[in-house]
Amino acid sequence: MNILITGGTGFIGSNLARLLVQNTNYQIICLDNNITGSKENISGLSNYKNFKYIEEDICNKINIDVDLIFNLACPASPPKYQEHSFKTLDTCYLGLKNLLDLAKSKKARIFHASTSEIYGDPLEHPQKETYYGNTNIFGPRSCYDEGKRIAETLIYEYMNKLNVDARIGRIFNTYGPYMDKKDGRVISNFINQALNNEDITIYGKGDQTRSFCYIEDLINIISLIAFKKELIDKPLNIGNNREFSIMDIAKIIYKKINPKSKIIHKQMPINDPKIRQPDLSSVKKIFGWEPKIQLEKGIDITIDYFRNKSKSI
Ligand code: UDP
Image (cartoon, rainbow, N blue to C red; front, side):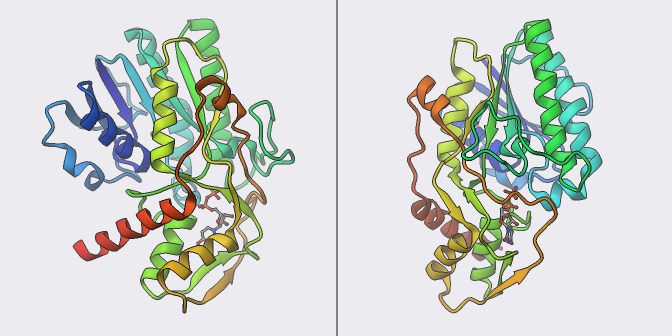
């Protein structure tokens, strides 16, 4: 079986590649343009016979023999997708369209990484898959939020008119080893700030909430969705439903690393969602799946990862 992972050098892609290369005999092809990913994330995999890396952009037509595609290609942190806004839009539509055409021509299945951002600043809480969302179509987050929404619509058409076997996971906030320490997301920011004796930057008052999933749990449910034989005809929320305020997250992290850290408040980004928590009843019903790793444990492993990484530089 040939498996293509696009976004293969990114945070989720490289963790998924490692899991599949080390635990299966499938041929794993990681493809990335490295706009936000890094080859360093897959450096340990090049010795494996069942691993291959291709530097390429999914916005270009790709012709590879594949049975299963994981589409994890797209800048995903707010500062990065805003910096690469045109590429983000192209990746969400043109890039995905290329992969759907590839899936169609090779009769391959495709798993697509959607996002909780399609719910925008939600007016329903927790967010069920049936909620249509509250997104701004004309703002700095729109390239990602609306890009990911049109991506789901494109998949709907390929599933219904062209019989492509596609599955959609709406990924909620995720953290863990192989995050890019400079990509601006909250957990990597707070850990690296505390490790470097820098101020902890809370945007706004810190009363906005998020629900954080440890990467191992996330790639576990992504795999269950992608490898399930029976069709799945609807998008599924995936993540962890334990909700924390950003202030709580800051306190948990700095107490573990540097209790003397100072918190400073910065301006709240435009259209930053105030609350977020997935309703996970669909994945629980289909797979009997629930996340296992508690935030405190996942944070400890992530702190160790960044500590070791800074030592090795
Ligand atoms: N945030 C923060 N300080 C930081 C980075 C992020 O207070 O240094 C906040 C951000 O405003 C948001 C939340 O943490 O409310 C999660 O941000 P992140 O960029 O990790 O992901 P998002 O859920 O916004 O995509």
